[in-house]
Image (cartoon, rainbow, N blue to C red; front, top):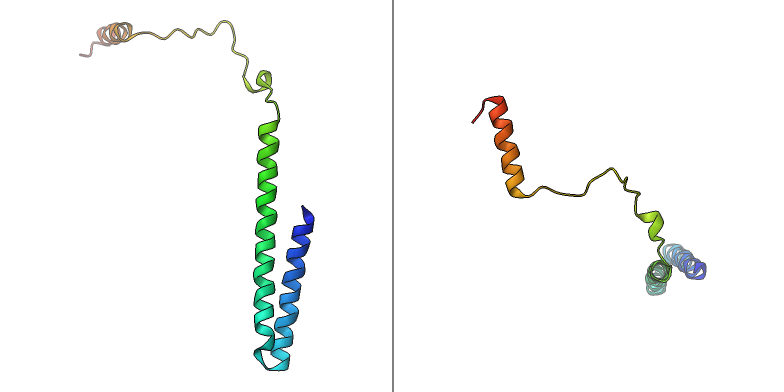
Length: 102
């Protein structure tokens, strides 16, 4: 929503103009409106960012994920069998015996 960002920029501009007028006039009559415009600009910018984030979340949740593209192809030659603890202990003992280490 670009209108919120434009409103934020307009508030920043108004705050700058009011601050310049305050320094030129020499009295603090313009200080309160300048600070109010500055705070409004920050709030408009924050609201714009919040709405953009919520729109991105909505779009991510609403879209259907394509599972075929997200899962890599696993070759058929790749075995997914994992050895148990006994088999691992036997392999370790066999390797130690081959190397002569205990």
